[in-house]
Image (cartoon, one colour):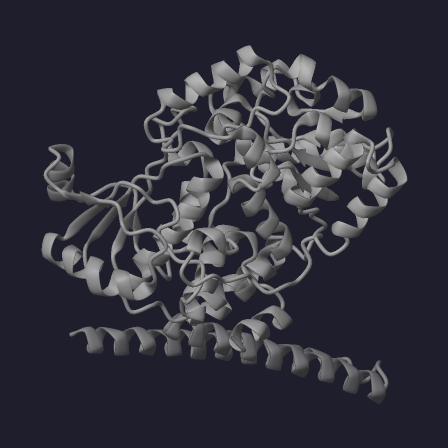
Length: 514
């Protein structure tokens, strides 16, 4: 019946086409007769010209009718899309993307279960973890539920994933590679709500075989698994090139901040750009950082006691008794604002340099920032560039505020972190991905010795400044191999700080030569 209907439909199209052709032929004949009646008054050349025009018109219209009839019968999408090319200014690019999307084969997908993940830490720790979890989901052929972000840490940020990242873009950008759902199917949702699902932290720094051999059987057995910790659960090195490059695809293409965050971040960058080039200083000198690290150089006795008390108040901060002086000597402390002022001057930045502080509230900032502000009066923060009304939606949402700093940091002319925490590393890697934008990676261990020598008088200013510049002449975020330490993954270079496999050809070549 369907075939007969299709045949009848095609017959009707052909009949209609023939009817149109006959009508045009009759019209042509009538016009020809009219032309002949005027032959007596027109020259032979003009008659020929008119006949040529009429014949050409008939031929063109006949072709159009045939193409239209053929299109109605077989519905080729390319023909149907032609009118859009003339009505939408961006339709050509859209059409190309649509064709590419249609022609790109979808990944063969077999659902081996559902994976829930609860990220822990600040914005950039969670960002890296999300990239790892998506990669694991792809590798295991499981359905990933949109990750839960940390709401219980020191910052107590109530934001959901969709308050920070564009969840629809996240899902669509990964749709050909990973199945992602906003929530569990009903039967699994009830289990999760009642707490009767398997929950566990995967082993830190694990490779792909660990997930294939140990995690996948659990997923197949229980059909649903919850990872309750996600930080550093995938190895930096030793993974297939395909997985490494996919981690970058998630990080640099799929993870996009919400339009509200993106818009305000772009506004900050534009305000700074109007005043000329600018440096972003990631001054990691907030109270939680100092308490966690135990670094109290330059603090009063009362401040040191306050920071120690805070460290003991958080049980997941494992290290309690810390030798602050030794830790600073080993280069494991963030530089103080006073030390940072000297380093910036030694690197050649003068008082006219525009500096954006990407950080939370500096601990006892009025006192500790005085030396830095005196040396560099053009210091600004987002709170100084935006109105209270603009920042109001972001108040008490530390991850969203950090996202604004992230956007400015990635866009800056120079990025200088004073501590190699998660934001410093992830921004460093993003700037490498964008073309090795200048990032000054401070060697704190060497700098502390130079600072001590300068402050004690063992080194004059010229010698100090010359040595600081020499130490950092090759620490600018340029192409280099990622350092690997097989038995000490915590001490090797972080993948997201130098995603070498995803960078220009020379980096991929060096990776393949390992």
